[in-house]
Image (cartoon, rainbow, N blue to C red; front, side, top):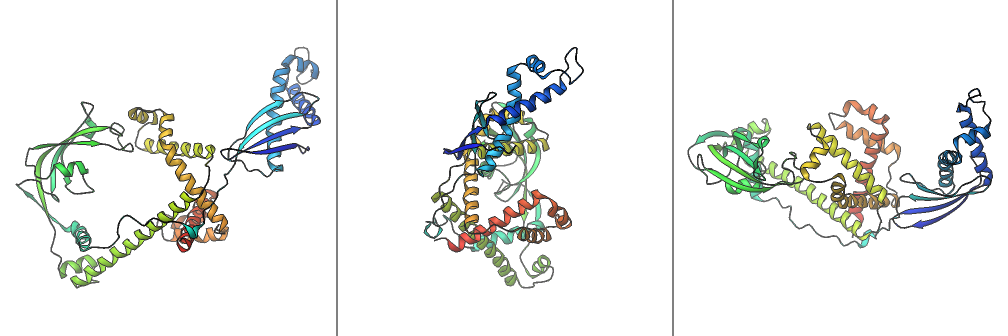
Length: 434
């Protein structure tokens, strides 16, 4: 259809556009004829061969309401698509269309509401007020000693001892978890070994275990996060009972020249040189973390100072994608989404409502950074993306043999384009932010 349409647009709140479309009467009549011909060709009416019944009889048999509905389903998508093209509007979801008037011999009138990408009002990057990090990245002697201990960890000598549990020991423990007065059998453990240190045991257990003796039971109250892998515990308050069945002491080997030779494959012989190389690695990591902190602070400052109204359609799409991802993750663990939500005591709508603020925040960041990339000419070309893809795949053992396939995949190219755009934007922001 290439008829002349009358299209009037208006900006609506929440990044929507309204279109009032008038369709010429001849287009309406032509659509009626086309639909009626199609229905007549399929109609089976007694006394007539298939497709041979008079159109007037077919129309009378199916009724005016059904015929009009068929005309709407045929004409409306074509008309809306042409109106969008005429006005160069790029929708981000299916338009919501209301038929205001449609009958034979008269122009039709439609009202369409379309969600579009929002307008972003960017702040002046050179005038951003960037908050400094609330912590330091200085490499201290204590950090160095802790790292040297970690490196010697695999060579530690573990010896059973008859004394109380101390921080750093390996405790042999029985574990029992109680929720709402019931023991969670899937979490029960007998004579399991656990190192009493941060990052291995829950902080609540580290607080109560030291000082306990053989066969002594200690309790800790724990609030499990909503994201906990076991749905029986996710978001729940629980009591964990730990009974000590044994204590093992971990003795690290002395850091001497022989050990340094072993740790470095003979590349270094001096303890001091080795300590310095470990400190250098820590300082390099600290610089990388400091850069990341600076990036996050600059992005936050830019997003906070910029203005954008996130469209509801994008939020719904993000939440649906997040829910699909959650369901796939649960399925891999042999769990069902409805059962997981039942454990949480939430409906899908309630779960989505809880995720909505974070989804809106992520989308705002993406929209602001996307506009910044467009404004500053940082969008990568196809050649840039291919080169970046080759570089990244070349440093990843899993991707090295898949470069040809990745180049052919539109999803992979979009992914690497997004990563390259983000890198360029962050570098540009760090260079130009006030």
